[in-house]
Each structure stands twice: as structure tokens, then as C-alpha cells.
Length: 169
Image 1 (cartoon, rainbow, N blue to C red):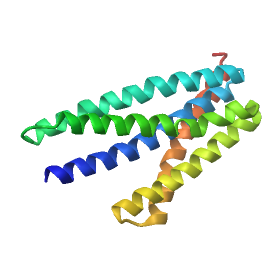
Image 2 (image 1 turned 90 degrees about the vertical axis):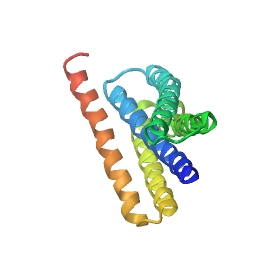
Image 3 (image 1 turned 180 degrees about the vertical axis):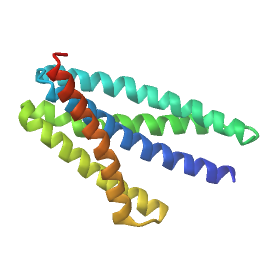
């Protein structure tokens, strides 16, 4: 039971880290980009988000895994497991963050914005396929579900940025 708990935890942290990184980063960057700020500001915002959120997500994973182990009364709860879970969260978030961020390094805002969204949607689709493959569920259904839910969060960033830029913020 303990081994299975750990494997599920690693899988959950990987999927959550990649998905959250893609969605929150592209949502934030899109919202900021649509508000007509400079490319440098967008990139700086993305880099700060990358470090803060990757560490925050890793710390949250570490603490939640430890709490879950305590709740399940797993004897000799493994500090090593909690550290591995947090590391998986950190690196999956950190690496995935570059997918929506890199277009802003390469192109101007008008070109980078759609590519950031497209690259993130493709990455979400692939993540959905990977998750379905590992969990042995419907590949296409899971991939589209990941893109659909992630797309809603991206739209929230675009709408918020658009609305806030209209009122002068």
C-alpha cells in the first residue's frame, strides 16, 4: 500500500506541476500582454512567476504529502518521499513554464501571444495523452479534457487583462 501511495503521489505531482505551470503562466502572461505592456515586462513577470511558483508548488507538495501520510497513519512516513514529491512538482513546474514564456523571448508581443497560447494548448494536449496512457484511460478524451479546462483558465487571464487595461490599470 505504501509503495502504491508513493507512485500515485509522484504521478499526481508531475501532472499537477506541468498543468498548473502551463495554465497559470500562459494565463498570466496573456493577461499582461493584452494589457499593452512592454515585452521586457512580460518576460520579467514570467521569470519571477517561474521561480516563485515553482518553489511555492514544491513546498505545497511537500507539506501536503506529509499531511496526507499523517492522515493515512503511514508509519515511518518518509521524508525522502515527501522530498521527491516536492522535487517532482518543482521541476515539472519549472521546466513547463518555459513553454508559454519562450515566445516572448523570441518574438514581439503580437506574435508571441498567440504562439504562447498555441504552444501551451499543444503541451496540455500531450500532457493529457501522457496522463491517459499512464492511468490507462481514454487517450483522446483525456487530452481534450486537459486542453478544455486549461483553455478556460487561459481565457480568464485574457479577459482579466483586457478588462483591467480598459479601466486603465
